[in-house]
Image (cartoon, rainbow, N blue to C red; front, side, top):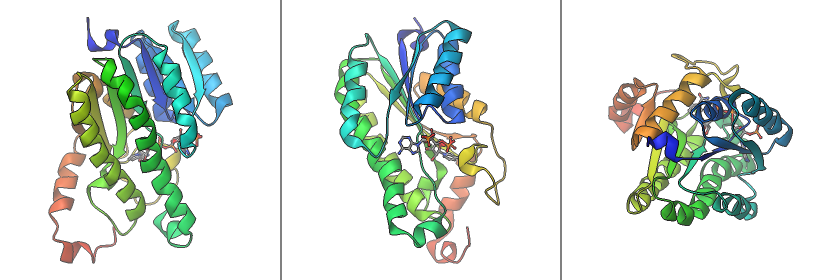
Length: 250
Ligand SMILES: NC(=O)c1ccc[n+]([C@@H]2O[C@H](COP(=O)([O-])OP(=O)(O)OC[C@H]3O[C@@H](n4cnc5c(N)ncnc54)[C@H](OP(=O)(O)O)[C@@H]3O)[C@@H](O)[C@H]2O)c1
């Protein structure tokens, strides 16, 4: 049996994003049931109905707010009722501009709470279930921004860096029980998050991103860049000495 076939249910945390919708369709096309989790239940319901009609699988929605950590256990309880290994695709995120954060400390706090604290909260609560369900897969869409703190988005970047370090530990934990954690560090993707943002280059589509996350996760890759060439861009960026990097406006 293939890795995809073993996982009967995929949960998409961030189901209202274009990448989340494309991932849910990819999982459904492979025969898995999907749970679209997020804040906008009407939007999730529309996507679930569309997937159910197109692919003949069960598609449901579930309320999930990264900031409401007290509510995260409910999603774990829902998943515990499913049989076999489970799939988690975590891609929710929040990226205000650094200049906005500089003028509003609460916004900085929210950036960390969504991208880091919210992700750690749900994954830590899911970890005991993932330990039990050998063959489970966790795929997290992170960002190249976590590789180096930049003038233009260092609060967001630091939250993603923290998330990447957390995932390294979670990967080691779940390895011991036979489950997998894949970190996908993305470059620029054409979504609501980047709409109208200046200075973007080599922008990828949401569908290509979703399909890459799916393929990388099922291969059991530990860490990967999407698109692949960001590995080399970041290699160069990471080698710039700090005394020069601090003067660069990137
Ligand atoms: N676009 C890029 O160039 C790029 C590059 C690197 C990494 N990434 C990462 O890729 C992921 C997906 O981003 P995207 O580009 O697809 O952006 P997007 O279209 O803005 O999607 C963001 C998703 O996060 C959800 N979200 C935001 N705050 C939330 C909260 N408090 N609780 C639960 N869900 C919340 C949104 O739900 P609502 O509909 O409820 O707001 C939406 O589903 C993010 O983690 C982002 O950091 C994006």
